[in-house]
Length: 299
Image 1 (tube, rainbow, N blue to C red):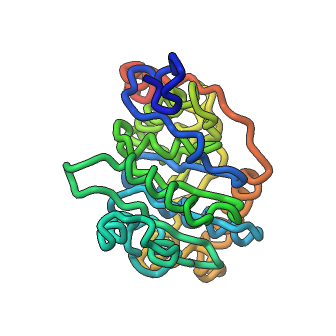
Image 2 (image 1 turned 120 degrees about the vertical axis):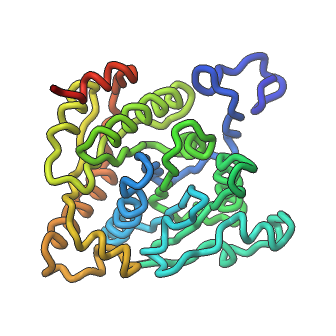
Image 3 (image 1 turned 30 degrees about the vertical axis):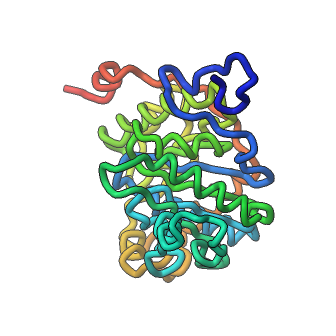
């Protein structure tokens, strides 16, 4: 049965072998530019997402960042503290969403960036994809997406999880954060394959790679050239970025005179402007696991 229209006879599967429920068109985000940020765990997705949100806001855009990890630490550099999650506040009203107010789960952060932490079920008890879907429904119910220019989903690193896939149903472009090393490039390859699978039935397309915490980008660039990807930005391993997390602030609140800070701020602003202007979708051709293992290795 078609889960969107019961009268329809057939709907293409949501990616090869997928058993996920398809997106109801009524839940689609309209009017805003929507980006989903991906990468292996610990690569700096939340730091990248928050600073990118701040950069968009510096350019005068109204920004909403949605954290999609049960750790709910995506937005704390914007808000200065851990915010309650959508799941937390839904539990307080026994999941009667009509009893919630926007201020119960959405909080204003640095330079007006609006912040939402979707959260997730307790470990081993459910799917994060459901939580992301409910969060978007709640935002639409309260008309919070109507005046938004940019939506950024900061997504957990598990490639096989429904929580990983759900933002791809809403996003226009997907960005992959990677360091110049084996593990993050290996993960990037699998992420690119997952995004390609979603692109068969949704509007999402790969935008490119953000090199993070890397002095050089030679391996990222070599992989990108071989697979049809493109590097959009490069953020070096600047200690001020690490300390900004400890100080619970964005890079734009750090002293621009510190080593590497002004350069990184300018790169985030350049990236935000590029994404706002629009980047062409990439037709990437990810490698098989064994092929990329051989490609990245050397004697």
